[in-house]
Length: 175
Ligand code: HEC
Image (cartoon, rainbow, N blue to C red; front, side, top):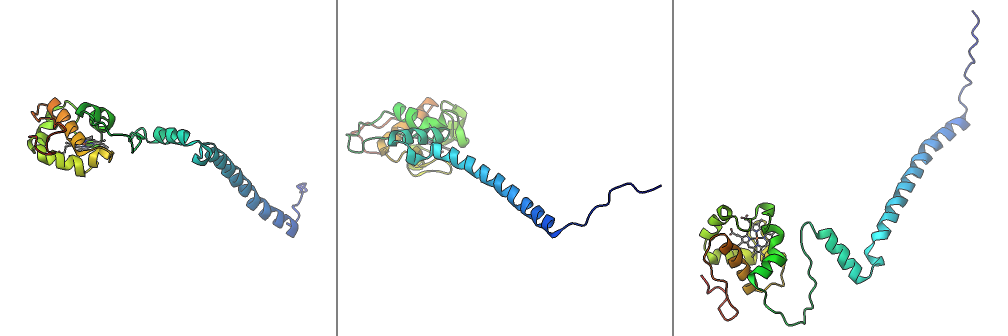
């Protein structure tokens, strides 16, 4: 039976070059397109293209799951916050839900061993940080007395009898 199949002609150097070029150029084009896409996506949210207010909003949006950003006028007179206000503005980010292993607000079992450490130790830990507990709850603008009030507010809600310091009292006088 006669072989009717067409015989393959030997590959010419020109074909080899075209094949190599194709193999190199095709992925390059794909990468270029992906890069363009990413670049375009970036430029839309690039901070430089935004007004400061928008950038601030965007930053806040990005850090929302982890922190709160409160922009304050450093020159404005600082009205001292109550323990509850500090808790709501700063500490609640973690302590309202017990994030990162923090003692949850109102959870007596979680707070009992903390309260047992004594007020002074808790103040020291809250002011300077303790494991994953950030110093001042991460808000360096808080004054000592505000942090202390928040500690008293949280601890007392879980059964302690700490007295929230008032502005006239020496910072660690309350027991
Ligand atoms: C980013 C999360 C976070 C924020 C915000 C935060 N805490 Fe905490 N806090 C923790 C964690 C986590 C612990 C547990 C640390 C440990 O025991 O290892 C903790 C523990 C504490 C303790 C107990 C410390 C001890 O010695 O047992 C006190 C008191 C406290 N926080 C006060 C505050 C106050 C007051 C604020 C707000 C000004 C605040 N925290 C904000 C995460 C946070």
